[in-house]
Length: 192
Image (cartoon, rainbow, N blue to C red; front, side, top):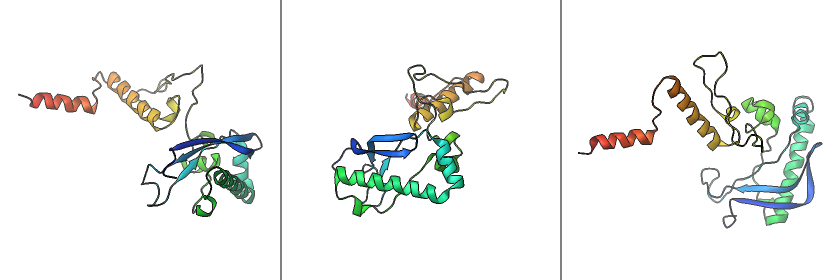
């Protein structure tokens, strides 16, 4: 798969039912051949994120019907392997590991709200709106992360951390200085 781009999107031949409320007609496949730390030499990790907004369905299966829960995860993995085989060929016999994570999986390992792996979705109304980084009447408390940042992913969370550091500096009446700015100041001081 080394000659393919890192992200491939393609329509499915037939719809894939994720849960009673979610049907998928296309896949976005992330091929991690660009990162040698994710798989041994000669191997490639592939990830596919599938939407599901039916948290109660997955939670109920995971807590009350574990055999069916595992069966549903296996059904989805088989359907995805079939889709990859149709699109790329020669994949099915090379699959060595499968991990299907549901919203219940994310809740189990991270205790995130309804299994969210990202915070707030960007909408036309919110754009990249800033959310509060503090709580009313809780002096000296600041927070950062996916729940105070519209849009998801690590870059947005890191920006949230930077914004929080700026707020702390402002509250302490200190100038916010980046590491690069400190390094530049030190070099300027050393220059004759």
